[in-house]
Image 1 (cartoon, rainbow, N blue to C red):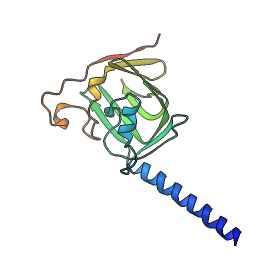
Image 2: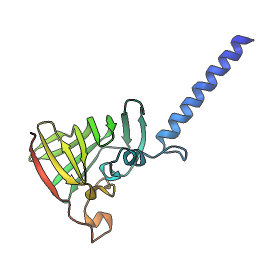
Image 3: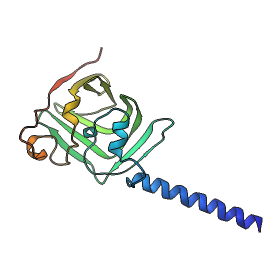
Image 4: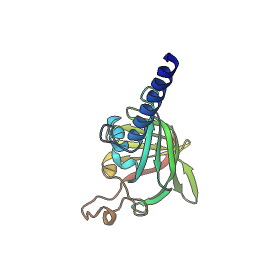
Length: 172
């Protein structure tokens, strides 16, 4: 009998763990959404597009995975094109996302992977390794919609300020 009790206990623990992971991924009521997790690390929600279908985060290491139904491309007021793969990974800590994978920006004719995002006061610095660009945090108060992006028409707000940036420059 003790072996049977042990087997039932292990099965219960596994099922409970799967339920917790599933709820976290689906944004269940007891778990923060991916956007709330971003805010807890001092990032605005608008660095992720609408439509995150699930996520996983290791709270000890900061390693995360976030998922969209499909890849997503949009423009930032015509200045840059961004592309999000259906899976986005990296490591997050307060004011810094590193080893980012699954997000790229079109610079001239090339798609470059954004590998790091750093918040410095009211600016976000996006790095592609050898170059970076800074944007005001205010530009990311709202999550962009796939296919529409961050422009005043897609947000339904004619008063939305144009995305202001300092173009990709060589890192120092």
